[in-house]
Length: 146
Ligand code: FES
Image (cartoon, rainbow, N blue to C red; front, side, top):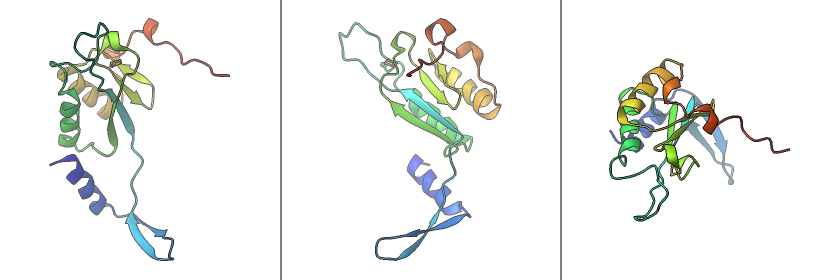
């Protein structure tokens, strides 16, 4: 099942409705969409040939996002878990990387096997997979802006 079709099915199955006032005063009934439990920002940056800086997407890693989406669909998690393709997340030396929110968890050096375990243990089990997280010295606390 494609992602679009899956989302449309979830819309149809939703029992909760709300009404939306349109400009002309028309009332339209729409299903509500529950807030996602997790957002997964997967870096999909690919450096051009000859670029000295490494990037998260190469010939060997280009199907990680699709693998993750497929697993989430198989486990019925697409929707509550929202995978998002992003550009560079600033940790290129440790790619492929992805950031999970809430929690600010940065997973590094991803493989399909690691993604499967992150889905099972972090998303379903509620326990981040510590050994796949970025080392503290490369992450630390967020900068204070004021
Ligand atoms: S290319 Fe992925 S973090 Fe920079």
